[in-house]
Length: 410
Image 1: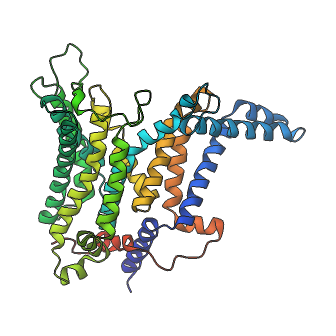
Image 2 (image 1 turned 90 degrees about the vertical axis):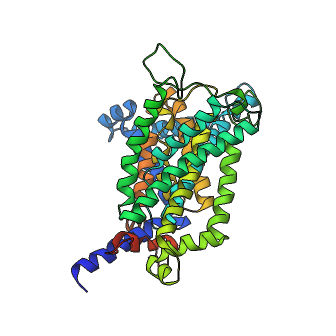
Image 3 (image 1 turned 45 degrees about the vertical axis):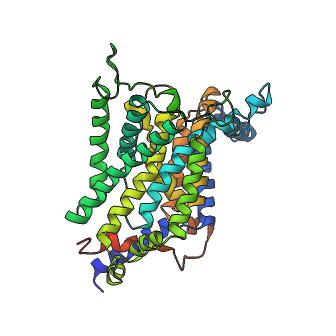
């Protein structure tokens, strides 16, 4: 076997392990991520740094300062994301949990879309662009059509899904017909979608009325198109969470129980064998990208219809890129992505509370990055905790054939 072939096999095995991480390694990666965040909190704490000056004479001062900043930092995260025991009323005490659910919902939906492509051996880096296209369609329906309540919401939701799916299908079509790599296509379409969205919002005939301000902003969605509040007007949580949970169920059924899912997984496992079995691999790529973007479209509708204010070009909130992390952490499975989305939603909800007590909210960004780093480094986790080597992997590992085959799609 040539050196090039050996390198390809090694790289393929690494990708296989990253995408098929077990529960144990995932939990350990999360714990190590929090440990890295704790080290950054300690290293940037003034009291701890001062105590280092007399560490050997009174080591308890440094240890006490380290323990205090970590407990206060993660305690603030808990109060801001799960339950605030210091609140005056129970209603206020559970508000952080509702914010975690609200912020986690679009991450779950978008993560499902990205995870779907992983299982087909593709890499969808265009979640941001697809989400923006979904927002364009959903916003247009929500601001330009007059329909009864509920019907208006459902039509806007479907429009968001269709808009995102069309952009995803375009990527699949270009890949199938020209062999262009989906990573390059999706990255470039992110920029096109963002600037196209901004252009539309500057045109009064399309998404906004004439405004004096120079900041582009779409008209607010009609009240009949807004997602209803889930547990009352005192909370921001809305039906976007319900749609995200339904998306998890649909994703599970699609990938695990349907014939379409079997075909998708078969292409992801080995496209050459799938083609020999009579499956049209090129059409499957188009279908996979469209379905992937369709799930992202659920997140787009969440962003467009979740609040009674007009969306701006920044309303995508980097959900498309965060969804890649969510899909990796969740192992591209429905339940895993659900839990990973809620975890990252908790990070978003709890960051302001950490900032209030003087802990930089960027620490949570470091935690997220560290988690992904450990997820993407299976040998490192096994070496640290002396875990046994992985003997088998799921269908995600067959992304090897997509990454390293010489011919690619024909």
